[in-house]
Amino acid sequence: MTYAKIEDMVGKVFTKVAASDDMLIFENDAERYTFFHRQDCCEYVRIEDIVGDLSDLEGEPLVIASEETNLFDLLRNIDKKVRDDSHTWTFYKFATRKGYVDVRWLGESNGYYSESVNLKYSDHSSAG
Image (cartoon, rainbow, N blue to C red; front, top):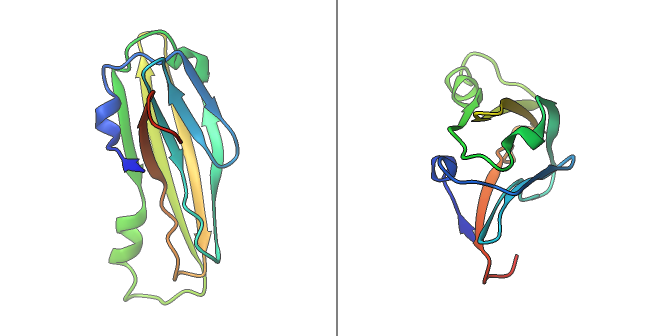
């Protein structure tokens, strides 16, 4: 598996963009970018909301592909209050000249497991 950076997606044209509860896929004839969470044990990471139309991201170059998360705010405040549970919001922002899409992920755990979203890259010739 090859991990990717979201910035690598800018300028690329995707022919299919699809989402399920726990996966977001951008693909064309040559490559695929898959947003997902690698399940460990006691966490739950899923797409909570999509604002915009994913089809607006098809057939035009991506001009925006960015990630924002509250993870660093949580780490900064860890000494102030110890919690029994943890929540991480991750927002992915995408745009083409056709439109803008905001994908909001929610990760929940007991605080000991990763709540992050992974981005995997595969080219047409590789499996996965």
